[in-house]
Image (cartoon, rainbow, N blue to C red; front, side, top):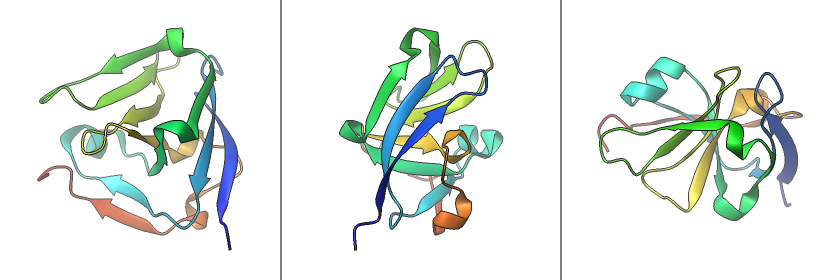
Length: 118
């Protein structure tokens, strides 16, 4: 049974709006790297093709550190972490589950990603 779903996502103020195709059979994860540990978001993986930003690319600011491969996007207006391009797989994104409409942590198995040691 196909358990993919297309859901809307946004930052808190609505300046950034996007749509993503998520796989409910893929685990969401909590990463323990220095940034993710501090922001505390549950992350839902999607492919690059599975994310479409409809409004607000120009309102996103990017934060990078260390290898500068991962790109963590935050709304310039409200400061919400919306999603990031992953370091381990730059052709995929991690979405902030709290920004997604119509899904919750109850829809996913939650795993720990050991970003601190990868």
